[in-house]
Amino acid sequence: MGRSRGNRSSGKTGKSRNSQRSTRPRRSGESFKSHLQEVEKKQVREQLDQLLEAVDEQGRKLRESMEKEDMIAYKRKVKEYLRFVQQEISRARKSHSWDKQGNLKTYTIIEKINSRLEELHREFFAEQSDSLEIVDKLDEIRGLMLDLYI
Image (cartoon, rainbow, N blue to C red):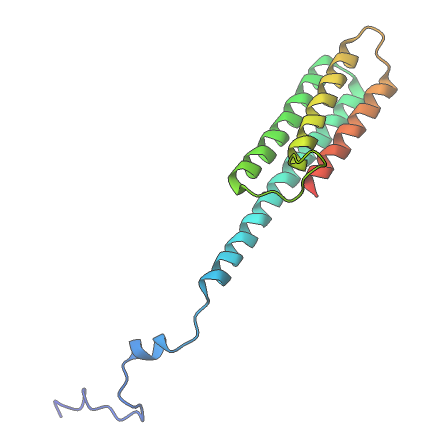
């Protein structure tokens, strides 16, 4: 009776549990890496969504008020969005598309957004600023930001 613990007749071939586990198909390293990349991509997309929504909200405030404080806050939100995009680009270290001069397209778009943001800033603070021109600049900047998003 003392040996009954060691002599279980379960119909198994005498393999231990550990050896049975090793014969199961495992998820490959590439599959796991791919899964991690997808999760990370989703998190980045969610963060971009939140930042873009914050820019949109501040843009709506600026359109309604045309106040200096709202202009400064809008500019800050756009810069925050751009900073995040640049961090992701440098972290990922990959390029998806290049322009005709061989520059990374994303950096070119970021430069355009910065340029339009400065134009918006100058127009906003110019004495003869036209609210329609400001609204046009807001729309142009948002369009460029969406180009980065895509």
